Amino acid sequence: MTEIRVPTLGESVTEATVATWFKKPGDSVAVDEMLCELETDKVTVEVPSPIAGTLSEIVAEEGATVGVDALLAQVSEGDSAPAPKAEKAEAPKAIDAGSEEPKPREETSETTPEATPTKGETVDIMVPTLGESVTEATVSTWFKKPGENVQADEMLCELETDKVSVEVPAPASGVLQEVLAGEGDTVEAGGKLATMTSGGSGAVPHSVDDGTPETTTAPEAQDGGGKDVEDAPSAKKLMAEHNLTADQVTGTGKDGRIMKEDVQKAVAAGVAPPASAASAAQPSVPTPAAQTPRAPVAADDESREERVKMTRLRQTIARRLKDSQNTAAMLTTYNEVDMTEVMALRNEYKDLFLKKHGVKLGFMSFFTKACVHALKEVPEVNAEIDGTDVVYKNYVHMGIAAGTPTGLVVPVIRDADAMSFAAIEKAIAEKGAKARDGKLSMAEMQGGSFTISNGGVYGSLMSSPILNPPQSGILGMHKIQDRPMAINGEVVIRPMMYLALSYDHRIVDGKGAVTFLVRVKEALEDPRRLLMDL
Image 1 (tube, rainbow, N blue to C red):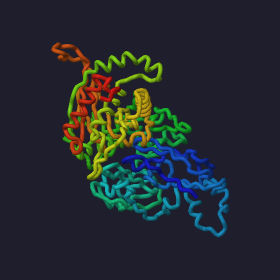
Image 2: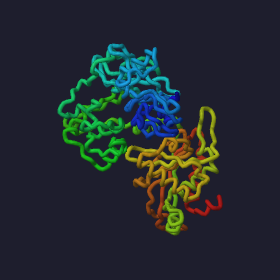
Image 3: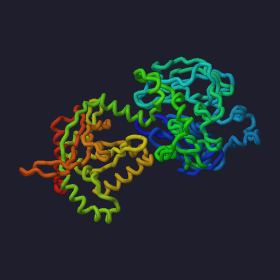
Image 4: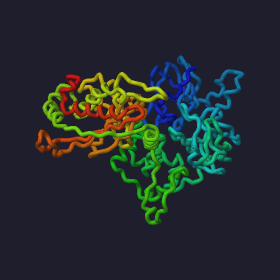
């Protein structure tokens, strides 16, 4: 018997939601055949079968939240397999004689015997695994109160750590009995949060009536029109945030299943929510008790406001950027570059470049090459601090910051120092397309040693970029704008760009930062220096 476990999800990602099972217990599977799909706040992860055999048991059903290395299912080698659950009513005696323990499994519905307590049993709600090096969390919000009915997998509370927000689901349907850790309390991994009694209908207090917005808190009311196909949990959450119904979104998943990307496309297309849902959206969103108190707002102003919970990606971006400011001794130095020579070179060869390499010649390849050239002279900008050590990197994994409809991501071009202009442009185009479509894997966003951020595409004339930890440097590009410049005693109009280098002053001195930026400027104003390695 081979266990199927949750793979590593990436840096700072400790949990995922089981979105889709492509196989059922009893189905035969081949080596590397996809068993299920997991969703995180950043990417979608497919889980393949490591062996050929039969899927014997599913431990984590669709919609369940699982941590890294958690047990998802079990696969038995060979062609034979235990009878699937659907056959238990027809062949109850197919179990070996004298074995009484499998009987409780025949009496359960969907979840495993370990996860489904018997009716009336007291169940402890424990703090889940919080991730590597994380030992405690703060109780942010309780979505249920003692005495309220809960459904299996319904969110009971939300915990906050210094890395991620963790939702704690109910392990079974029943009644929440006692809350042991209130909002604002600090709890340790494995600690007890509350107790509940299993059994009962597990109905949500709000009855499912004539389609009022309050019914969106019940999972069964989010399926859209009573269809049999269960939509992805992340898609349901995003639809609720944007007040959309399943009828307004076209599902592209298996059997018409609505995925997160489908909702994002509907939002980008400007699908208007129903008026009744929009007017009542505000009361359905819980307000975290730990947030900063707001100033008093007039009643007429409050009625025109909309409160939307931050996505996990946005929370991660906010936390990491603030952590960067709190940790690094961040400083920014500025310079400007005359783009005349780069623009002339690009205009001269762009058609030949496109014809030969099949990709357009942009400015990013010039800036990437210029940064690689400068990093060789000032290696501390390409290094990072690890405790009391400085780690110098004899390679350049260039991060290219990209804005997407869901937030900022930084795909990494590995070994950019060994790539040609064409290879760099192709890699940037490929990573950019994946970023826009939400198809970037965690591996493609990890391991960067230096980052370039181009705010000029949005019209930014000057800014101070924030470091992407644990990196020690980030270059900010800006808008190219014609300005009068003094050249050889004459005033001429030149296309100028401001450059900004933010660096960690703990490892990079002012001299090194200024030297780096000057070398980038020189390489761009005279691209021949790149050929001569000057």
